[in-house]
Image (cartoon, rainbow, N blue to C red; front, side, top):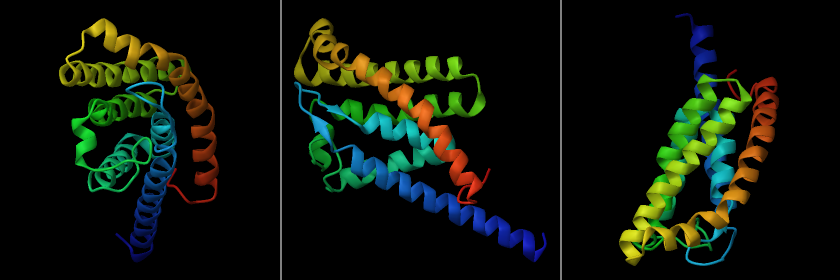
Length: 188
């Protein structure tokens, strides 16, 4: 490989790592903003994750999410309600934090592999359903709750807002990626 090509490759890697760090910061800024409505608050975490997936792709978008989770795990107040620490994983919302990882992988792969917006929308909904399943199972186990009560507290109130967040990410994520690519901030 020529020196010039090596330089371009290095620049692309640096740009992608920088964009990943910035998206991690965006998740850390948006996720703590929440509205407590019961045991599980409304937050902007999944909106930030979906936007990261549209901008970075599934691999680096998932990396940005894992970095966010690691920062919260070590105690930075980046989880909903400006909380952090390992104890958060042992609480009623711990399954949702962990569930973000498979949600990101599933949604990211569908976003990256299929440009059909309807397929992306359905894929994002399916990925969110996986998040709900993991989080609700954890909630039921930890809180000794039955499934119907957990669904009414942890899923049903969130469906309309999560659909809106998915639509927002589907509109703005590709627009932001296109502008960043034109500015040579992201590799195309």
